[in-house]
Image 1 (cartoon, rainbow, N blue to C red):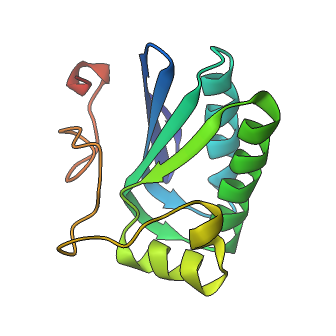
Image 2 (cartoon, rainbow, N blue to C red):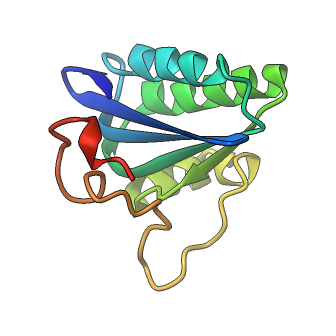
Length: 133
């Protein structure tokens, strides 16, 4: 687990998939932390980087730009970037900019985010790495 004021990231490596949970805000101040976390995840050269956005409470244009940059970095390294759990406000922002199709987001069912269901991500900030499955 690592973070800066406003955002925390949690990483879990599973075979050929790396899971990155983002907790907090994605904005001009925190987007560099997301970029660094993505770079760190790619050091293991996973086939897929599944990014859980279910606990992202705010995202502005800089946050969207960071997601686009992450997609480019993943593409260059041969890793598939998968976004999961985006809240309606973030999904709407991505749809407004036509990035929902770029990221391959599918319509949600039942209005609930398709998060990874990590116990510490959905409702509260983590106190440490022991909360990871």
